[in-house]
Length: 257
Image (cartoon, rainbow, N blue to C red; front, side, top):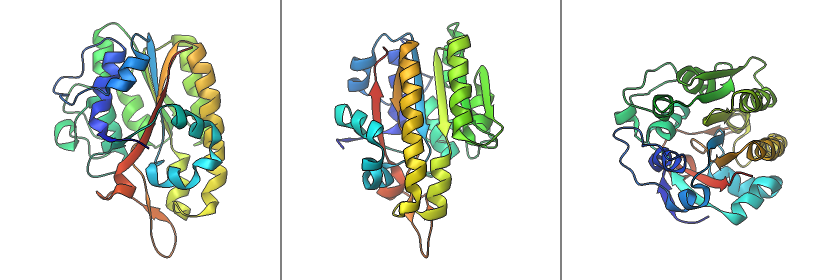
């Protein structure tokens, strides 16, 4: 799937696409290929199916034809920071720093640094963070954004509708969305289990719908994840380690319509 880069590079990449300064202390270089393809977009959305790392995606990408097609056009691999858990790596996406820099250990934590939410706000724009109730997309990202989206039904279908509603009504300059059901099903069955396939297919459909509408509204899109998962015995999946199965995530992108 291409060369390996770092998830710490995403924040500066987003800032350069939007022609904004990067968050303070975010010193990792931008991902030049993404910047070149998306440069000058007025708005950008990050869509992140939780735990859809390189390992599970490689096993089941044939069950996700839309996302697979995007990766056949543009694809690279990012390495998450330690520990490879959800709040830590979503915090890295919006700050450009590892845990020592941003200070986030759980979704209830407070950032110890500037984030993309702060940068967008300081330059007169709005941001949005969306996720299921009790998940990082709501409790960390939404809480720090200008528009806080919480799916009370705990479904990604509602996450989709909230995010699209924000885009239609408010046109925030930056949106970040956590699709949490992929992580849930991977924990329950493990990446190698065919039991994950129905959720992967539904996630693919959600991404197709969201990207279709968001690009029509002028959004450039980056699709990546916070971490992957590895299989555990006797059944199920886990993450948090430095091994490739946990740390490597695929990244693709789509220009605004």
